Image 1: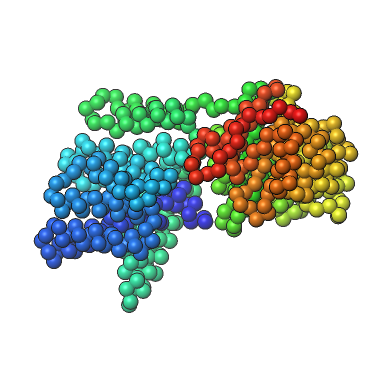
Image 2: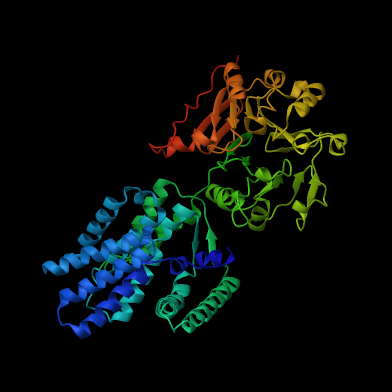
Amino acid sequence: PADWQLFWATGVGHLISISGLHITMLAGLIAKVTGLLSPSLRIRWLAGWLGASAYALIAGFSLPTQRTLAMITVLTLTRFQKRPLPPSTLLLLAAALTLTGDPFASLSPSFWLSFGAVSWMVYAGAHQTGRLPFWKQEIHSQWAATWAMVPLLIWLFGQVSWISPLANAFAIPLVSLGVVPLALLGLIPGLGFCLKMAHALMTGTAWGLDWLVRHSGPLLALPTPTLPVLIVATLGVGFLLAPRGIPGRWAGCLGLLGLVVSPLPRPDPGGLWLDLLDVGQGLAVVLRTARHTLVVDTGPRVSSEQDAGERVVIPALRSFGVRQLDGLLLSHGDLDHSGGLHSLVSAYPVPWILSPLPASHPLLHGIPHTRTCVAGMHWKWEGVDFEILYPDPEDLSDPTLKSNDRACVLRLTVGRLHVLLPADIEARSEQALLERSPEKLQADVLIVPHHGSKTSSTPAFLQAVAPRWSLFSVGDHNRFKHPNPVVWMRYGEAHSERLRTDQCGALELHMADHQIQGTVLRAVFPHYWESRCPETEPKAPP
């Protein structure tokens, strides 16, 4: 995982995949060798195409290999017909061929990055071909592709590597002309030593990239641009790469400034934005006031190499334009709520972490500024009240309580609205809340306890809360069968608007005074093969 992060951070991730560059180089090499044996251009192109096809077959016809093979196929066919086509037409034909073979390729970011980069290189080189030496054309193409892809990279990933041109300048020759050929030669019996040479060369390349990262801080994280900002930035790139005869081309850089300086939306003072992230079977919530951000739980860890903190929470925070966290509430230690903790605190320094876990707990090892979450804690940010309702100190020391029944319960007050986040509490904790703080349980918005498990959401608790909105954070086809059908129906019978992340994706609620406006991700970016999400207008309270 560390190697992948290093290569992607420096913008050379394409070199450690079966990239189009490798296939193109192999096809060109085979065509050159064939030219020594036959003067026929058709035979050369056919040999190159066969070599590229064989390479793609060995690579399993991954999406990058499909795109490259489509381009080589179109180019070979035009050479056979002796009717050269303009590069833009070749590119369109290659895209059409790729989508014919795999219509879902259009949903992959790599599809847009690949064809987008080549399109900009064609645009930038339209007035340069034949006027510059080959090596200058290559530098110009690399420069054009680097700047042209900045808006798309920020829109897709929320970050961009400024050292990518430098990293590619030395990594591309080393990997493509050294590592890949040596690795292929190592497959030939008797040439196994070439694999050791390829490994040594790759290790040296990684060392150089690591040196760049440590001395330059390459990644610039930016919020997801709005559509107008993205359009202006793209037009700016087009002007920047326009022919030399157009005066003031450098003014195109002004279009890119919007990606950096555009104002970031935040709630008005007294308002709250709640984002229930789609982390699968787990929980992660981002709470934003006018000037503060609190994260509640960090989602699950799905393997030793992947967790929701790195894959979901951090990208979401970057897309919101959050540059620092003002606090982190870890409701309890279960992995579906705490799996992304270490990834998150590595990316975002946190001034304090509130949890029911003791400071000696392995999960908190190496993490400073931890505090114990107990009932009665209270703070206010820009008119929004935050209050811990549970657990009491004696609950934390009760050996008969499970981890779920020690979870922190957070209540927020936004004007006349109330929000309740009870984490994974079960029936025993719900009864304790009914006995200790019944007047504080009513809530307009409820993050359903324990993902809608049958051990939670008792009728008495639901009657006391009486939520207008009930949000279920559940994974698609999760092994626990959450939410339980009986519990799901119980919320419906209580006339509560039910929304679940496995059907709706991420959920965002904007709250101010007595108004709530809801947005679901899959309503903004719908896919016909995904389940439909209900409308986000709350029903009248019972």
